[in-house]
Image 1 (cartoon, helix red, strand yellow):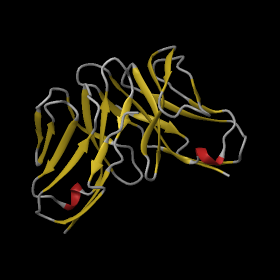
Image 2 (tube, chains in turn green, purple):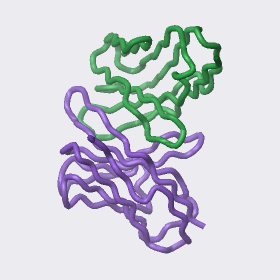
Image 3 (cartoon, each protein chain N blue to C red):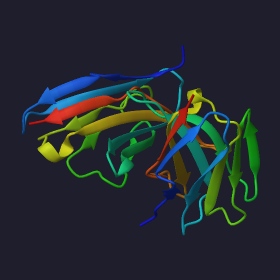
Image 4 (cartoon, helix red, strand yellow):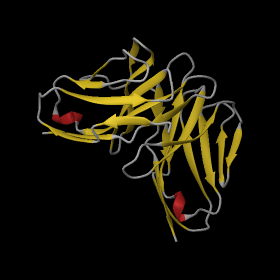
Amino acid sequence: TQLLEQSPQFLSIQEGENLTVYCNSSSVFSSLQWYRQEPGEGPVLLVTVVTGGEVKKLKRLTFQFGDARKDSSLHITAAQPGDTGLYLCAGSTSGTYKYIFGTGTRLKVLA
Amino acid sequence: EAQVTQNPRYLITVTGKKLTVTCSQNMNHEYMSWYRQDPGLGLRQIYYSMNVEVTDKGDVPEGYKVSRKEKRNFPLILESPSPNQTSLYFCASGLWDREDEQYFGPGTRLTVT
């Protein structure tokens, strides 16, 4: 069974601090997505990474896909209260049409 | 506006009473999928569909049925709901190419008593 483990599970930080969320697996993924989910809403796609070693930036968010395509990280610079939410990673495997989701990292940014 | 819609948003029902949750997308996506989200277990895929009349099981398909008769619609059917199917359900649609992505609906909170 494929698993995606996210760490940390919970994170509470002050506005302006930096943070990194990790998404790890023993499986190789053909692509990996990061989503943010707010209470009462569906997940919203932030980014998709497909190439080992790939780095993508979205304003203050930096996403990296591991060289072996088994892990990924999300780094937030100068966190703001608007970054508060549940961050989810999800992987898909070449040859299947299934998605595996991590259990999520719940981030709270205090003003 | 490009979106995925689900109905109903909230549903309380009793064990054994058949129900259908509808899902519709207006983005002409070929790929559609259903997930359930439970505390501590995250999002788990129930069924997915690559195109009209093409469906397959995800990780937790037991107790659920789906159909894809039209490209835009992908209903989730619970023939005989049980309390362990109490959950938050999400429908998603998307592209399946090199940079696959999914767009999620707002969710349906189902309670089975």
